[in-house]
Length: 74
Image (cartoon, rainbow, N blue to C red; front, side):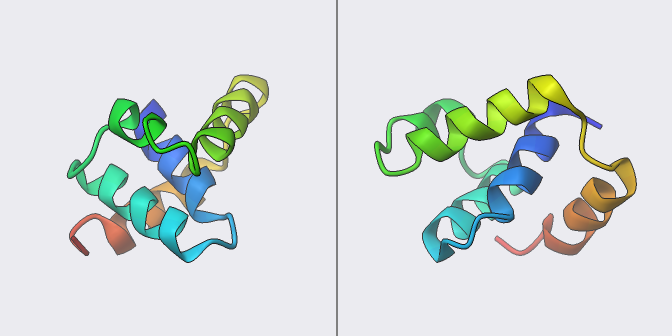
């Protein structure tokens, strides 16, 4: 699974509607991770997701299901 899909999956898990919408834009390619990092409200969550991704890889089936479900939402 690619890094961006995994990051979007992890960000979508946060109970924050705006962050979830940003995660959907990220997975669909409408926004880049660098663009998201310019939003100071999102930056701590992105850094945490990146740290989490360094420690372990999310379940591939769950990430694939997330991508399939939300890829064409935006």
